[in-house]
Length: 248
Ligand code: HEC
Ligand code: HEC
Image (cartoon, rainbow, N blue to C red):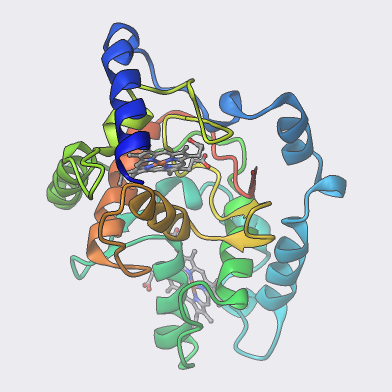
């Protein structure tokens, strides 16, 4: 059962070396024209239900997000800088940053990874950077995390013994199980995935890729996926934020 896809992929990988070292392209370039048009059109994008919920949450209650940050429009450009290392040395993605505000500034219980309110707020904040170029810091305190993420990305894993790079660089543009393999960027997340019938985080997508090669699935918000997320963002530096994305 595992032999066949692995063999098929390795055959692809052998061909793929010819096409390797090509540039990294925005995720939207790999979408079908239909899905791309739908991603661009809020009236046909189910992810907007989460955006609207997030914008309502932003304003809700006395110690609301808005009470400190003002209108959510002020979040323009913020998502493009995450993941980032906080003053205490902890690597935070946008979800982690929002959870910190929730627990430290609002003195409330964390929403929890993959919960509706956290996905909604993350989508609403990320939308404010839509179309802006990713601009994560990769030097200084971020450097060791980028390096850990790069190692993860290049290491063969799981029963299929495949590294991220073998699919997302060497075989980008080829079809696999009905998908066109992209460069594996996180710029469209959180994304509404038709297969999920819901909005989901980048870490949910990463867990699906880990499962696809029968490798360890790390926890949502785990240090492994956080470092990987930063490395993916470093690959995407200069490319546009697409969140909330729309995916098969
Ligand atoms: C009591 C004030 C306060 C509240 C309420 C608050 N925050 Fe914050 N937030 C801050 C401060 C201060 C920072 C800067 C980092 C720090 O010192 O923690 C920050 C940073 C952020 C950042 C990163 C901004 C950047 O430029 O990097 C985001 C995103 C954010 N908050 C989202 C939220 C959301 C979403 C909520 C509501 C769930 C919220 N905050 C509630 C005070 C608050
Ligand atoms: C067997 C091939 C394969 C491997 C190995 C693989 N992926 Fe994927 N990945 C896919 C396919 C297929 C998709 C869905 C199509 C797409 O978006 O690229 C996908 C989607 C993604 C996406 C979502 C892109 C988007 O815009 O929606 C990210 C991010 C990603 N992969 C990262 C990774 C990382 C990081 C690894 C290594 C831990 C990895 N993948 C390993 C095949 C693979």
